[in-house]
Length: 147
Ligand SMILES: [Zn+2]
Ligand SMILES: [Zn+2]
Image (cartoon, rainbow, N blue to C red; front, side):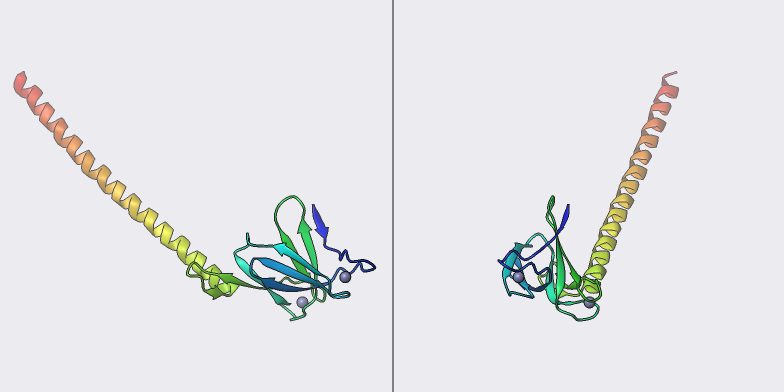
């Protein structure tokens, strides 16, 4: 179930937060009482930034998935998600587009490898077929000579 995160501090029921990533945690700061909440987001392969990816606003409504790991933020102004930065395989921070491009490159590379493997297998098959034909010819000759 997706639940809206609501501030639990006494006398506050704010549901808009500032976001900040600190190490493995996403820190939410209630816009009204400045109360802080930490969520472990080490399972994400990206860093959530403090501003909206579309309008640059910095307050968000936050939602949690109560069944599986997951925390989502929506800009209060335009409903977009916060800006994210991805970490590529070399540990370098890249934009979402750059990560996507890298992922595609990796998939292309894997595909190429698989095609290479297939070609090798095909060659093996061809040469084993050659051996088989040779053996058959040998057996035939043997049988012919015997009779
Ligand atoms: Zn609050
Ligand atoms: Zn926005």
